[in-house]
Amino acid sequence: MRADSIVIIPTYNEKENIENIIRAVTAQEKQGGPEGAPGFNVLVIDDGSPDGTAAIVKSLMAEEFRERLFLIERSGKLGLGTAYIAGFKWAIEQGYDYIFEMDADFSHAPADLPRLYAACEAEGYDMSIGSRYISGVNVVNWPMGRVLMSYYASKYVQLITGLRIHDTTAGFVCYRRRVLETINLDAVRFKGYAFQIEMKFTAHQCGFRIKEVPVIFVNRELGTSKMSGGIFSEAVFGVMRLRWDGWFRKYPKAKA
Image (cartoon, rainbow, N blue to C red; front, side, top):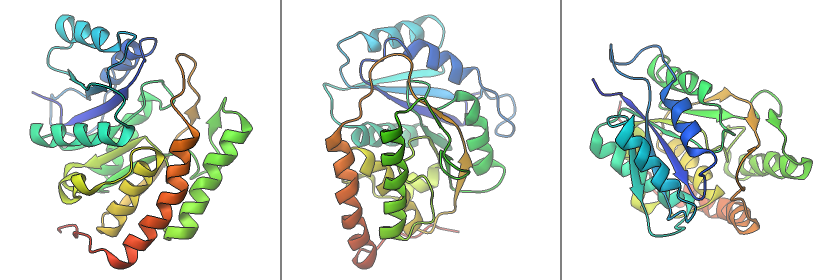
């Protein structure tokens, strides 16, 4: 029996992490879901990594994870948001009920996946967020400047949009399929941090129930961060556009 859950992991030059994260995700067990089904499958979206990340994934697919690991290769760095959109569409077509966003670098702990899953499958929420800020500031090994920038960015988003979500830029998320089927994925406009904010804001505007699950975020030990000032600036100015949309745009509503 196939898993009901798929974890989407975008990659660019993650050869140091990719095999270990795949093994860690597929090793997780969860309560609930189809009896006898595996815990979590993995979909890697690789943006033409020159370090051979995709080749490692292909080797694992052929040797050990034939039915649990999948790969979409893209021609170059096309943006985090577009990677997730491609993954969402693939997962919907394949009929997965629970679709996750997760980083490749172990900043999101695979052991937290069952908790995000349970918030949706057992508690009935439509979207669960692995939140760094719901119970204080739970970030390890980040420079203080980056912690403050991330924390106050979420406070800024709350202030401008009215969202009652503490970690609006979080990239560790579980969606029920119906959330992604309701949102017009082709209309999602942002590619970086603002993509994460836009998805949460849109889900809220559609009337979906969202829960924040406290997690500890640990800065990567291997590989290089993909964060840039341009990505962060997109989030800052994109929030104003989202607030404008909230006033004048009609959002599809969640079906009971």
